[in-house]
Length: 447
Image 1 (cartoon, rainbow, N blue to C red):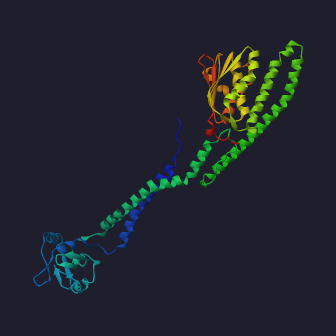
Image 2: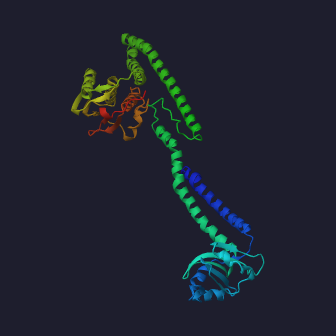
Image 3: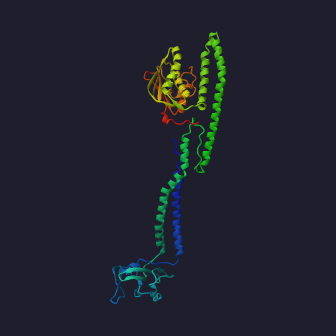
């Protein structure tokens, strides 16, 4: 069972998110510790007492400030027996409650000028610790200096730090889940492009290279290595093509000499070599045909029906001489674009292949931008219908064919952007179907 390739989401998205979480978890106690370390003044008066005090302040008959014992103030006094406070309005009128320390006796005149503050003494029981707040009361705006329940700063700092840290962490998570994937996709956009380019690499499309533009520097060496490998493959293919072309050309002369000598021989054994010489000549010509696919290509609009009739007319005398027949049926043919000589070789090879496999009567049907070659022979086994397109593959080891005919057919058809398939004919023979694209959709041939 093959393993799935690793995804970049883990190292580029999940791991940074975990790292951010770890940094926050480490930073939180450090921040709290620094806050606690920075505050060395001891406990402070809980500032929540000032709204309760403000709600209890009213005006007396003379317009001065008075304290009304409310339920909340009574509960606060019960909770903090040492509760005291001084309140002053904007006109300087003040009122006090509880045992105000003498140190704050003269502080009343300052309250109208203050709005916020904490005062803390250094030693227990911290009776001088007080809070200053400006509040709205039934008697109007007042400034309160009061002492009540003491609170430690640790809990407050931790709570405040948590309140600040949670939104930060939420923002970090949002950035990781939304922004980072977008950044990753944008950064790897060049990789997606070269992957699309790599999908178009084909044996028939030589000279292609992957683009190195907008490719991350970490992946650029891989792209360059692939381009260098493609270059070496192109060089190897070109050397092989030149060798095949040269060999085929060199074989033509001795084959022609052999053919003349065999035809002129009177010895029956020598004349029986004629079929083998013909086979060698056919093989050399088909090797040259493969080479011509790259060097002598013409792109023009062709009348497929007329081309098929022309090939059938050229082959008819040979078929009649061997007691065989050929029939052409045309039904709504459309023009196709391509190389006339190459397509003629396709029709010729398919007809010859039909005769070679025992067909006595061959029917070529043209319909639209496709044609079919049907014979009445024994047919090709289904398991062999794909393999016969391989070079030098033969159904019968002693077959007179070269094994390159159908391979050449497939190469030519694919160069035209079409496809070829071998099927079983209704009468038991073989049906070769060739489909070409319409002229307006035919792809341009790569050099």
